[in-house]
Image 1 (cartoon, helix red, strand yellow):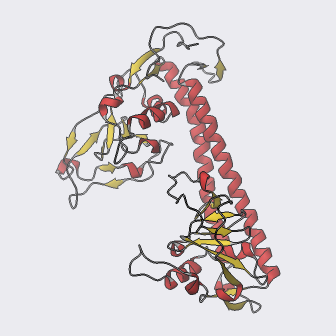
Image 2 (cartoon, rainbow, N blue to C red):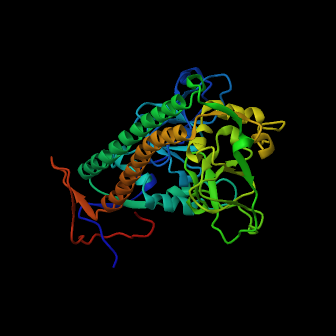
Image 3 (cartoon, one colour):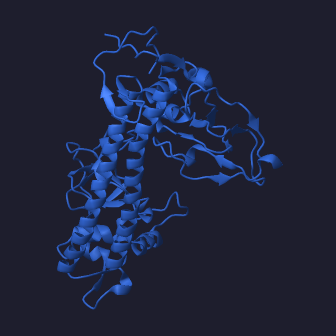
Length: 409
C-alpha cells in the first residue's frame, strides 16, 4: 500500500528549493585572493564534514571555479556513491567538480544536507551516474529528484535530532584517533631499538621465516590483505573484484601466517592472518618458526624502523615498480626479545587494539542508527515534536496527501 505524507508536508523538486549557483569565477582575480577553495577530496564521505581547506592563490590557479555563498551546500557531482556534501558557513570557492546549492527560504541547509546524505538520494544519484568513464550526475538529473519536505519548524527539529547522532559519531571518531595515536606510541616504545635490553638478539628474517608457495587450492575462500583491517574475506573489501577467474596460481595462507603486498610492503601493507584461504600472487606469504611469536612479529613489521627497512630492501626503478621479494625480505636484520617477552608485548598491544576495535564498532552502530532514523524522519513515518521535547514518536497512520511517489524520497 502506498504511504502518504503527514498533513502540511509536500513534495518538492530538489533544484526548485535549492537551485545551483552556476556563477563561475576566475580565482586569479584579486577579489577572490585568499578565499577558501574546496574540492571533493576535502569532504569526508557520508558525514557532511569538511576535512581540510586550501587557499586559492594566483600561482597555479585555474579558472572555472564556482562561487559558493555562505550557508549554501556544496555537493560533489562526481562519484556520487562517495556521498560528499557539506554546508559552508562562509563565502568560498568550490571546484568545478561540485555543485553549490543555494537554499531558498523553504528549506534549512541542515535538513537538506541530511536529504543529500540519505540512502534514498544516494541510490537515485548512483542510478543516474552509471555511464562509461567517471560516474557523474548532471544538473538535469538532479532536477528530477523529488522528496518530502516538512514545514520549517519540523525541519529544524529533525535536523537537531539527527545532529545528536552526528555529535556522538564525531566524538567517537575523535576518541578513536586519539587511541590510535597512543597505540602507535605504545607499540613503538615497546619495540624500540634504543630501549633494547641485553637479552634481545639479532637475526635475519630468513632465519625465522620461510616462504609459503602452495597453490592449486581453488577450493579455499578468497582473502585480501589490507593495511588497516588486516587479512579479511575479499567480499568485505569495498572495491570491484578484479581477481582472475582462474585461481589455480593463487597462494594459500593459513592462520598464523604473515602475508604482505610484494609491491607495497614499503608502505606497511602486511598482516597476520586468522583465516585459511587463498590470496593473489601479488602477495608474499611467510610462515614463522617456533623461535618467534607471530603477533609480535606482525606488530614489529608496522614500526617506522621496519617499514624503512622494507623500503631500503625493495627493488625497482620507480615507486610504481618497487617490490620486496622473499629473497630480499629474508636478508633484513631485526632485533627480537626472548619468546616469553614477545608474547607479553603482543598481549599488551592486543588489549589496546581491542579497545580501538570496540570503539570502531560503536561508531558504526551510531552510523547505522542514524541511517535508520533518517529513513523514518525524512519520510514523515516517524514524527518529531517541534516544541521543547525533541523525542521521536512513530505515528500509526499517515494521512492522505496528494502527490506522486515517483522519484520522491
